[in-house]
Image (tube, rainbow, N blue to C red):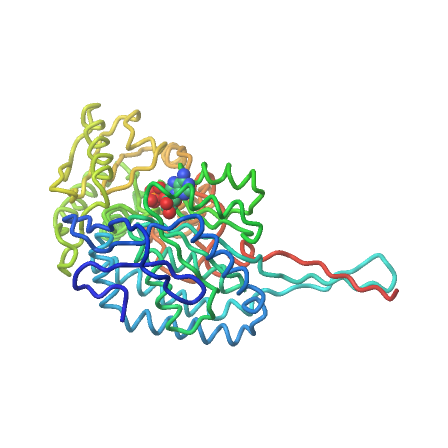
Length: 486
Ligand code: ADP
């Protein structure tokens, strides 16, 4: 039986060495962000639990690393089928644990099973070279080897998909994993994955999940840094936490892979298809209530089309249904916590106080914040500087006259994750794309990632590392072997 049945709260435990641990010890509550109903009592893990998980992952590593890629492939394909089969149950889980709409959950599920099917082939990718040597009779061979145990932190926001990334990228290349899910959504950020990987037949110890109470994150995660078996810290979350963990990783000399926040500007040029731009911006800015690292926070619109764009976008955004995400027609569910609501509301008030125009939204009902558009936002308002990530349904729109100025402003933030350019002139779009300092630039598409096979990741404060098969660089090491005649 599944750990999430959808009928009343569940008691979850850790998954270590191929089995659920006993339900002993303290728990912490996991609450539905819409109404604070109890979704789960989750095990409040300790450093000793984490150490047990790392030991299991270390013991499983040699056999997993040496398993034939074809054998690993079968397991990933089986897991993909299970994800697809359990679609409706996963949608129900993500709604009550994370406030995700059916549209967003289905999107994550489709991306996840697609990534599992992609990952099934990645085991064949680590390849090498035979190099020339100056030494007579010497052969020099370069191969790629998995790192060992990769410790992962998963977030609550795109929890289901992002946790798959955290398991799959290292595991596909022969590493074993220990995951510390977000305290706010531990089932959709790791525990349900353990259940699926186990059902698919992955060997014990190849994946492990230890949950922790909110106040214990630092002490439980400390074991990652102290353990010699852990060779890489794979973190998805805020740049604020990444800085703390990065300092710790520096002292421990651990490799880090970081997927952090973004500002994700959109440029709508004078020749853009307005209807397509509106669709792209609505999806890009308001998917999951603006709580995804790739949501667009600001749109720069050429002054000649600005007023029409704002009016038509506002009509579309007002039509987004807000409410309980278990209703499949709802697009905008609750924000994750009270402090998330406060952050957005404070930023909206700050901008209005400084003279911004509220086009639509700007109010909360409980934790549901109505999707909000601001124009005429002064350059010193917090939400428009992008210096500190805004994480909710708040979009700033600015008119521009000069493309170079807009382009410079659009990337004057510390982030460099994603950007979009809307134009009918694809050559011009391509040209501008080359001038963006970002990990991902789209021409005529939303700033969100929508394909599992493509490399996603940022530059600047948005992080290091890439998903997709490019992750072979992050999760393997180059090994030089030389052979001489004597
Ligand atoms: P988000 O705001 O997206 O939840 P955070 O960066 O706050 O992102 O948290 C992401 C993960 O980092 C969570 O698993 C959380 O438990 C963990 N975390 C937060 N602070 C610390 C810390 N000081 N030490 C170790 N882990 C932490």
